Image (tube, rainbow, N blue to C red; front, top):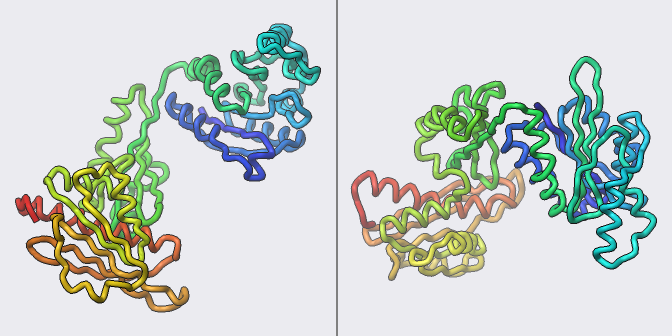
Amino acid sequence: MRAEIISIGDELTTGQRLDTNSQWLSERLLEIGVEVAFHTTVGDNVADNVLAFRQAVERADVILATGGLGPTADDLTRQAIAEVAGVQLVQDEASLAHIKALFARRKREMPPANLVQALFPQGSRPLPNPHGTAPGIDCSIARRDRGPARIFALPGVPAEMQEMWAASVGPAIQELLGQRRVIAHHRIKCFGVGESDLEAMLPDLIARQRYPLVGITVHQATITLRITAAAQTPELARAAMQPTIDTIHRCLGVLVFGEEDDELEDVVIRMLRERHLTLAVREWGTCGLVAHWLASARSAGVFQCASVFPGQQGWDDLAQRQPGDADYLLCIGPSPQPDSPTSAPGNLKIILAHAAGVMEKEFPFAGHPEILRPRAAKLALNLLRLHLLRAADSGTARP
């Protein structure tokens, strides 16, 4: 079963409001085993709405729409669905009574415009909205040579939409499925090579027709591998993913730094805490990004202090690189200034100082300016992570 989500409203197509409803509904559909194939956003134009619904009916079995069920002239969802279904709008007396009761309970007179919210495509079913004046619509659309598509139209107010999903829409879709199916995901986080290099290390794992499916995304130099499997229970889905998870760890080794929501700073803080070690940071040219990340990673008792310097100031005078009161001192050198996209890359210097010595590393510093700073911060954190791994392998508890 494939699903499409249609978000309706000029406030979405113009960028004035973020479409969080589609994200929320996608997560709920995946939880019950429905593949979301399309997200569509359409403005408040009836012809465009009709086109969007017609396309969705042809390519998806279940369509969830949010928005456009209000009482104003730009609320066109019910009209568009009726046109796609080839039927008239008819008044539902029970829905009208509910809307009138809501206004009475709030001691307000119902405006005549709200009458339209009790109109439904003929043959459709109202979806109760206990706390709002916009009932939803459950409508089946016949298709040639296959079963009907099912449209569920919900109000755009997130709280109302979510309540109606739990009470009406989710159970109805599960009934369509017949047998419950769970789609599970597992994310593996990697750092240290480029996306194409990492993919080459995983032969055939990224193939689109493979099961379990493995997707790959990159954000600020962190590569995330997302494994997806479907089964009757979460436990069976996890069992289906496990051989793939094991293969990824075996192929990538220390390039894998964490899972799920882990970031490099979370892993580094966790490793230091397990070893009862502390850390201080000095940053040049990264605007305190390493310190900010560490301070946000529940680092109390581990991350002791940070110094942030603008430009080159103080770096050349850093003669004594000692960790002071902390077990480790991590220094991130001034970022080279890229002159142009065609200029030769500079080198970023990272220093890790501890009681047993000083480690210095230089890394080529080239790429889009927007990703250079977070990449520099992650290179520093990863250098410390790898050092801690080597110390653990050698049986050295302290630096």
